[in-house]
Image 1 (cartoon, one colour):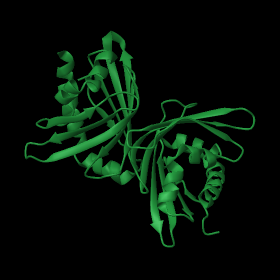
Image 2 (spheres, rainbow over the protein chains, first blue to last red):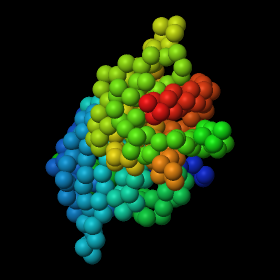
Image 3 (cartoon, chains in turn blue, green):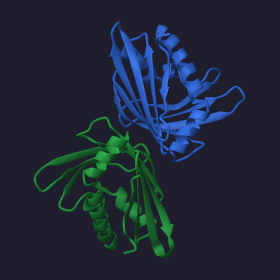
Image 4 (cartoon, each protein chain N blue to C red):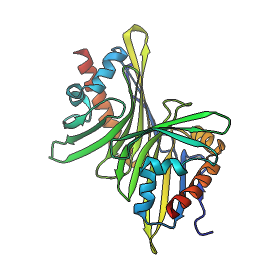
Length: 157
Length: 157
């Protein structure tokens, strides 16, 4: 499986690095991160529904959405876009509203590969190591893995 | 000197914590961070001039400004406000434009003390340890110390 998710969460640092390749060009992978009607089809774990209040991917824009799990629990997230550069780069803040005022920065780089493929690098920096560790033990990896598998299908469209 | 600046830059972490007390209530210290005409009177090292392109301190707002040193060099900075809560909290991103697309998050907490005083906590998380270390060796501490001394004078009116 050449498109496996790689996650690096170095011990003692508030950082998570992820890499995943996709069988689609950067413009398409970026669009699937930009257009809320596409984002809601893949972001989050399997079996969750996503509802978007605002999803305005541009420098200075913001987002707020909810994930609804099968038991009826709701998880809300919000942030602002520090940078959004079409097909290349998104730098955004990230707040899980159950832990208010604790904010991470996520940098997404869309790298063009040969054959019309993309390598997506995500560098997340959390407020502290404890917050990063809580994020990981909340099942983040499963959510990202399942979400990217659905993103594969969105891109295969 | 009870209002001394305390800086903690723990080894091996991309973090800087600063604490400084002011002889003015949180509402006044916050206002001096919010109103660009006040900010330009204190932010940055002595002898620098600050010019503001935009400084819109509200949730979802953004800022961009330049510092001009006595030799004519210009240093540009920008970011977005993830949260701005009057008299309490500012969470903002921070980018030094000479190092583009490398973004920190700064959390400023305005804590009310007895006697109408304020303790300001700043928690900065940089993209990585090398960036944090470069920030410190660029003379950050001097700039913050001199800036806060001018902020004392702004608050004294």
